[in-house]
Length: 118
Image 1 (tube, rainbow, N blue to C red):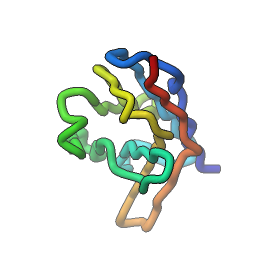
Image 2 (image 1 turned 60 degrees about the vertical axis):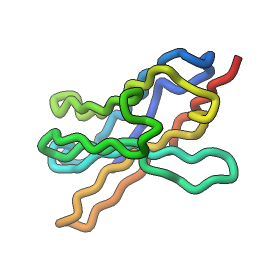
Image 3 (image 1 turned 90 degrees about the horizontal axis):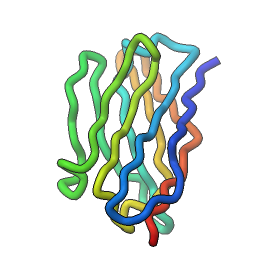
């Protein structure tokens, strides 16, 4: 059974940091491109960051470059999102996504809420 379980979200003050984790199971994690997306209330889901199966990283919006870092640990089947200098506009539900295009696989986690507020 495929599972992506996000954790690490919560309430943080502006300027603070959080590290999100996404633990994968039920598939060969190392073969998949992993991404973090987020969705704020009333807005569309947007790509935050992406890391390929070989470890190449693609940052998304300019507003997140230099503040958010994606990484993966294939031995632990886990992808991380280190977020720093958080702003109120970073408030959203953050989702983990796993894709293996050649197999037509596209998996999503349930999301973890991140709230940036004083």
